[in-house]
Image (cartoon, rainbow, N blue to C red; front, side, top):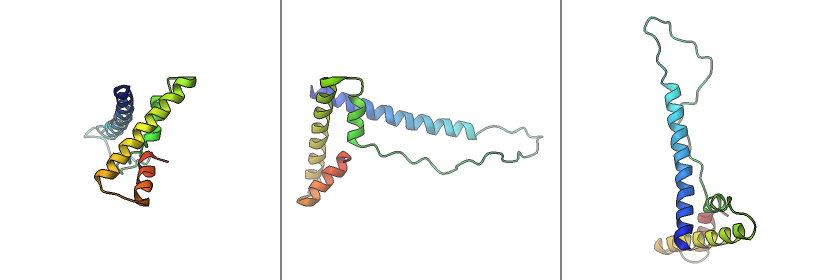
Length: 115
């Protein structure tokens, strides 16, 4: 069951990262249009944002919600609870590795999960 949950979380994150990469490549391909050598420089009709896109911070709660969306009823609730328990455990392990203690640990776990 843990493998299934881990697979669902990883696949949801992969899909999100792939969509970000796809949107970046689509933006890049649109801005690299070729201009004929004999034509006058085009006047800008639409202003473009030249800044790099900022990725959306996805929380573990969002990943769990996305992973359990295809389910319904009690199965969905159970899947969400299992996924969130795994996310809390992962965040707690990370806090322990970083040697965070006390109230800071609680705050770290909350922010890590995305509460």
